[in-house]
Length: 319
Image (cartoon, rainbow, N blue to C red; front, side, top):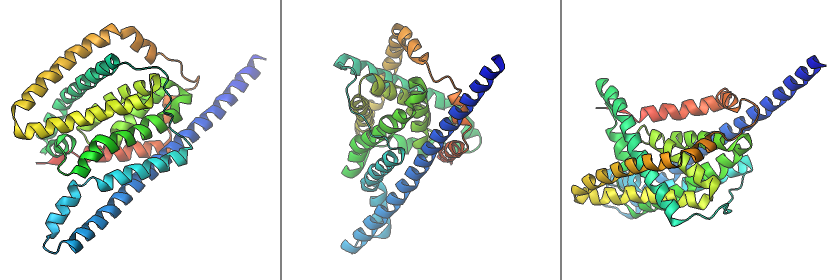
């Protein structure tokens, strides 16, 4: 009898393993298709923009048109929207905007402080990495520029502050995280945060977006997807405003550094005060199968992770 019970448990685990792997395979396929569509749409719209600029403005040089297209946000906006829609269709997942719990202004301020504090912590993590890269003749300058420079054109500003945060939250928290929640809420938040970081394909943004992705995930789960969107919009808006003002007034960078250090100290206090809540969240029950192992041993998912890791590392450029 005992032997039969063990045999039946093994069969159940095998079935659950196959289901889990199939789930992760579908997710990997959806992400690969998203990336392919994103690049295809960006290339196509960039080509159309270049053609129109050169056709409509006879005096415009190729270099001028290229610079305009590079700084435009039109292609990125359209690619984000189309990509998110396709992933939703593939995974058959519709994002829910239902409010689970009312969020107060005080709570949003606390999460904003945590977000800023984590960003500075992410910058500190990058210091030894930057030093190591420098010893090999590489640097983070280009990656830093892409991550923090303010937008030049209005279309890029709209993409950065409105389209990107909303599209990314629908994709990551609204679709992917919800898709993974059947294997545990904590698992879904952490895996989605990792994928969110990798999708940026930027060495400077990777640790920061991964950490704040946990905040966005927690907000979406406990309060609503809209609250995660708002915090994400505020983050990108802060980067844009700081960059714009910093280009004109050097003191802005000093004030920003002071504010970020305050946020780090405040974050330590907040985390200590809410340590039990954080502990309970991390200890949430998951499925009685080793989903983490299944996820990181799914062949297609490993290919996806390797692909985005490659381009994240590639963002480190030689001097």
